[in-house]
Length: 259
Image 1 (cartoon, rainbow, N blue to C red):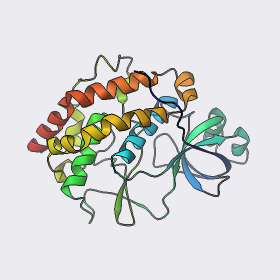
Image 2 (tube, rainbow, N blue to C red):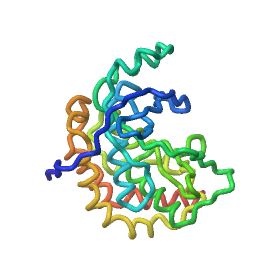
Image 3 (tube, rainbow, N blue to C red):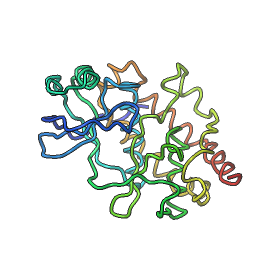
Image 4 (cartoon, helix red, strand yellow):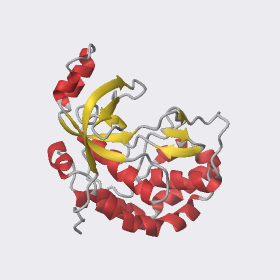
C-alpha cells in the first residue's frame, strides 16, 4: 500500500551551534535556527545515523496524533562551517559528518527530566497510553535508567525515540517479524503506574491505524534513500501488522499484571 508523501516537516536552517548536550549517547546539540528558535539537534552523522532519525519522526509524530505531548519536530539544515569555531574535535567531526538535513526537536526551556522517584505521578490512563505506544513501536529506551520523559508546565512530554523500531538495525525483515515478542516492555518506567494496556488498545488502535500513514509520510525521502534503510511501505506494513494483531498489547498487559 502506498503512503502519502505530500506532507513534510517544517524546514529551518541552523545559524549557531550553542552547546553540546552530553546526556545523550549520540551527542545531540543545542542549536539556534533562522526562525529564532532553539532546537535540540539529532545529527545524521551520529550513532545509528539516519535510521534513528526516521524512528524519531515516525514514533514522535504518531504519539502526537494519539494526543500525547511531543515537542515540535523540524528538519534543520546544517552547514559544516557551523563547527569551525568549536574547540572540541569530536563536535567538529560530528557537525562535518552531518551536513544537510538533520532533525530538530523544539527546546523546552526549564523542562526537568521525569524520574520514577520524583514527586510527579502520571495518571493510569496516560501511563497506559504511553506504554501501549512504546510496545507497538518496540521502544527499548523508556526505562527507569533512561526515561526519555520531560516535565514541562506540569505536563509529561515524550522525547528521544531514535531507539524505537529497533528491528531496522538488526538485518531482519521487519514485516516478517512484526509479531516478534518484545520482553523489554516489562522494564518500562511507567508500567507500575499504568492502567489496563488492553483498554488502551481499544482506545488507540483505530486512531493509530489512520495516523500511521501521516506519520510515515513525514519522513524526508532523502533520509530513506541515503540511510540505506527500509521504504515507507515497509515501516507502514510492519506497524500495521503489529497493530492489527494486537499481540503486543497482550504482552504488555501480562507484564503489567506481573509488575
